[in-house]
Amino acid sequence: MYTGRPEKPCCLCDRTDTTHRIDVPPRALESMKNAGPIAWQDVEGEVSLYFCESDWDLVRDLVLETGMNPLSRCNAARASFALREDYEAYLNAVRDQPDQASLEKRMLEEAHETVSRYEDGDELVEPRDLVEARIVEWTIEDELPEETTKGM
Image 1 (cartoon, rainbow, N blue to C red):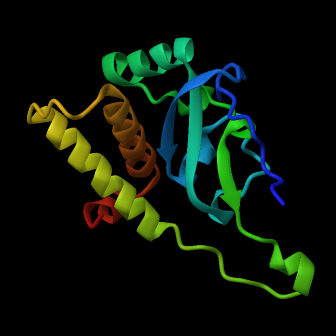
Image 2 (spheres, rainbow, N blue to C red):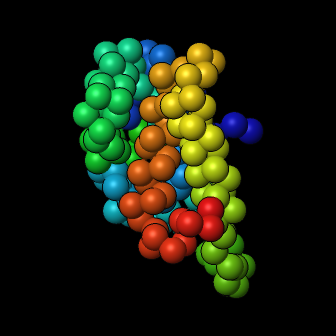
């Protein structure tokens, strides 16, 4: 039985006619509005953010022209992600938290590759790819100590 949300609203304005999606690491939830009750460590996989056409233009301009991370303007309640099962409540047992390091490492490597390809003049890198890559870089590199991201 499917119990998820069938609509994917814009994380800025809540419109349901979204045209663009980016995937960010779970750590990105920390910098979003209304994310206080969400334990980003319990998110399994990537967090998807959806944008309507007019808000996408704003996000693209903020990232590519201004160099600003738009996540603080996004509402975490409108993000799409999967939380791990709460076995502690069901079984009275404690599970280890998911290790986000491998996901963050993969996403950061892909982001660096996308930015590098764009800077080398690769015409196959679309603006959406570059926006996603920049946001992933800023999210992971701003939150982790410098010596940790060097190995990623």
